[in-house]
Image (cartoon, rainbow, N blue to C red; front, top):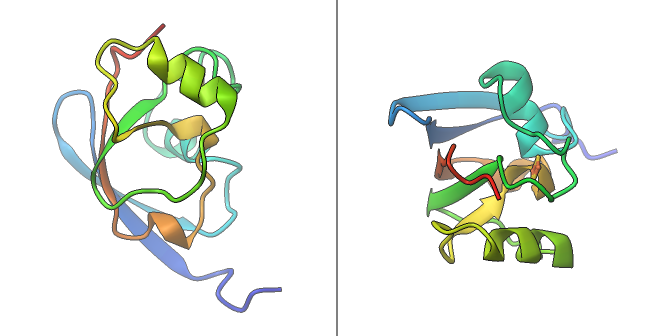
Amino acid sequence: MDSMASQSYCFTYFNEFGEECQAHFKTNEYHSLMELLFDKYIEDWGDCKGRAWCGTCHIQFIEGSIKEKMDADEKHTLSKIGNATKNSRLACQIPVNAALDNVVFRILKDGTV
Ligand code: FES
């Protein structure tokens, strides 16, 4: 077991109203970034329950990025979202671990495909 497993991390995000928020988390506390945000901070997203199909969990990184490769479903869904950029990801496909420490991203509520 990784001795860092219970360490706390923090990231910053801008919600759909443009408000700056901070989220604290521990490694592997949630299956994905979408689940973390859904549970702690946001209520109405994740229509497809994390299958990378609906696009409601669209986020864009402002500082930092995630090395995790995109799978075909995520690529396909992002390609159908009009306001997606090269910094876009689907939060449901992002694991909750130390890579998210200190990143900054914004949530795009209009990402529905
Ligand atoms: S929850 Fe549907 S694409 Fe992420």
